[in-house]
Length: 147
Length: 153
Image (cartoon, rainbow over all chains, first blue to last red; front, side):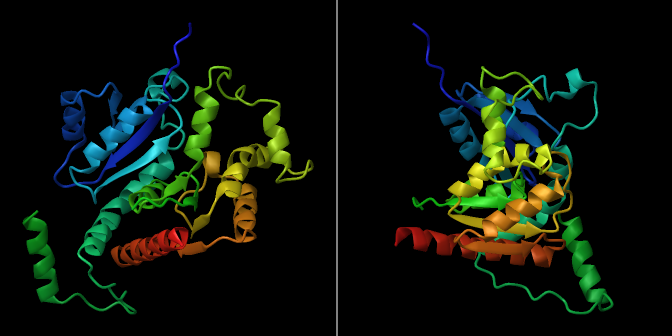
């Protein structure tokens, strides 16, 4: 009798958090009992495995910093030879360029999700460019140093 | 939130849109799932051999035979998603539009088909600053919340 293999899916987890690093998320998965394949990348993780387990893993990881961890599906499994750079002789894999562009926008999206959660009103976008006030510059420097 | 609407997203492989739609309790219709079916099915090989005789026929439902085959090939994947869509989010001026989603003719046809369907559509500009990102997220959240209400009815 042939075994009925459960449907396997792959998720890309992109981490744009000040508190969680890709390695922390990977460690969380290694510590768990999920039988999934995890690949660490510069932007986060790629997780492949049975659909149920991958969904549970992504929920678990998302909880680490829910507004700053982003998830999307991926067609090819982790390490698939048709996409893996090690086999294809280097260079960015197809699909990386758009992901890289979107990753640059993720901190702002994360802040917006935080504000949405706190029910803050929509900020008015400045209509004209003014000179930066000294007090505002001081506030920005202090905020950056406090990070 | 248990009510799910199938939401078509453009760009079809967007991380931000797929995540936001899922986060607010709906199902994103993204091209990645279609690709998965093509590349993990054991009866198919690797590109460009992963096309079956059925695929061009599916593509022909959306684009005529004189249209470049790349458009029909892409529509064979994306067309069924548009048919399933119960709502759509279209983002204009995404930063990069090349590779598998880089065919402008397919993108135009896709947007035309979505707009000619009688479904709720949210059209936005790709955010470029923190303020516009906030507006972007708030508008998507409001749209998807409204969708939940509509599906419940």
